[in-house]
Image (cartoon, rainbow, N blue to C red; front, side, top):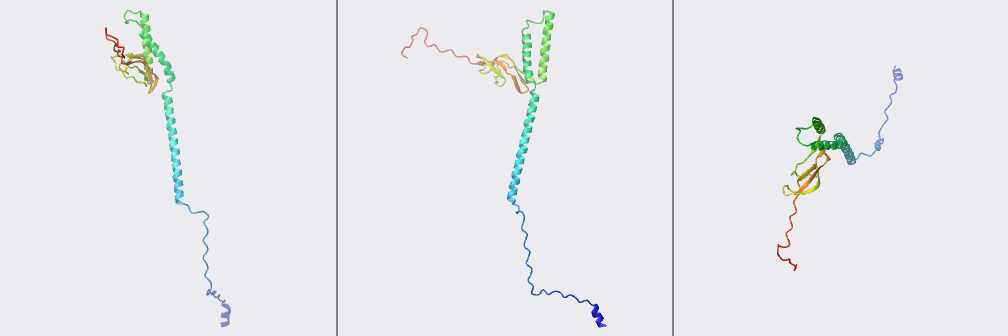
Length: 210
C-alpha cells in the first residue's frame, strides 16, 4: 500500500541552493545617443530667430506702406501733365477777357455773345480745376513772398511795401492738391537805394588833402 503511494508520488524538485553565490552586478547604463540640450544655446538661438522674424515682418510692413504711398500718389497726381497743359488754356481765356474793351453797354450783340461764351468757358474750366483739386495761386501786393509757391522775376524799389513782400503779380500759379504745378510769377519789393551824400557843398572848395 505504501509502495503504491510512493510510486504514484512524483519526486519534488528541490530548489537550488543559492548559498555562497556571488551577487549579480548591475547592468551598465546605456550611453546617450545625443548630447543633452544646452538651455543657454537654445535660448540664444530662439532669440536670434525671433529677432530675424521681427526684422522680416518690419521690412515687409515698410514695403507695404511704401507701395500704398506710391499708389496713392499715382492716383492723386496722375493728371499732373494733363493739368499743366490746361493751364495755358486758362491763361489764354483770361487774357482774352482782359483784352475786351469798355463796358458791356453798346457792344455789338455778336461780340457780346462771343464774350459771354468765353466767360462761360473760363468758369467751366475753373470749376473742373476745383473738382480735381487744382487751386489757383494768385497773391496780392503786400503778401509775403513764398519761394515754394512764387517765383521772383524782378525787384521793385519802393517804400510803400515791406522789403521781400510781393509788389506785382505777372502770372498766377497753380497747385494740384499739395504739389506745385506752376509757381506764380511776381515782382518783389525792395528798399530803395539811399542817395549818396554830395562830396562837395555848393560853392565850397574841394578837399585835395585826402
